[in-house]
Image 1 (cartoon, helix red, strand yellow):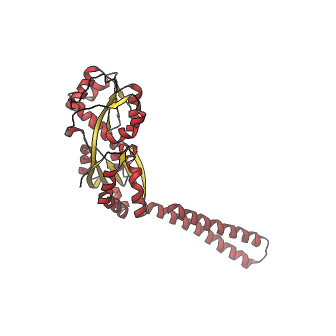
Image 2 (cartoon, one colour):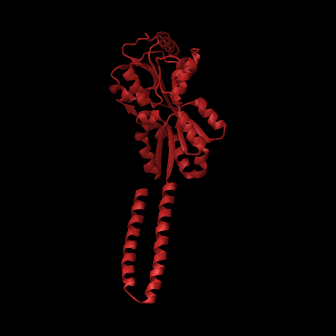
Image 3 (cartoon, one colour):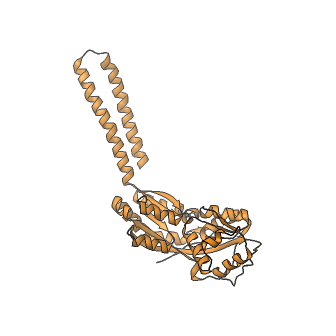
Length: 310
């Protein structure tokens, strides 16, 4: 719709300018003072029309769009591409997506640069809300974190291990581990697991086998594949990339509450002030049974990858 408005404005202004220029040539060749007065009036109208049309298009664009700062995992998994067109079609509101680590997405919200957030680091989200940066928050769906590693499995991880035991085996073996290193929800979870193991980030920095990718999930998986290393991933992004990760496989470990990966929607304070109707529409749409059903039924290679809180 924004493009149509802009095209119409440009067409109208172009036609007016064409007529105006044609008329100006006629006036210049005429000695009629009344014609010159009309020329001045038309010049004022032309300038006013150009300014007004520009302001109108800008206001329409500002009114009918929101900025969503989101974790890279729901972008890399393909979920947003699958569901957001439905919102835009139903509401006539464009969603501009900025995919970042959750920590960076929350910083966007703090600075007032994002209207809505889709994130997955509950501890950081709680602080964000307590400090008044968010107006509404709801945890809508979840999947699991998975440990991905070399098919040779140099740390000897097996199905009886839980995630903490698996990390300890990686530490003891000195096997390559690739970290997101970007304050994303996945990185926060990784650091929580190392902390349970009694290992802090300073100790990790001293290990040559510990690789900081400082990247999104898809890129981190690629680095792990190239380095024959282990990494922590959300299951959806791994499944999306699995066919390209020829050196890696999913480690079979015991499923425990520690590997649950919750995703929440937040309406920021900025969003509620600048775009109240648009953010309300987004909130209601995300919370609707239809959208939850789309999330729950989203598949990668015929596998469902998200579970919904009803």
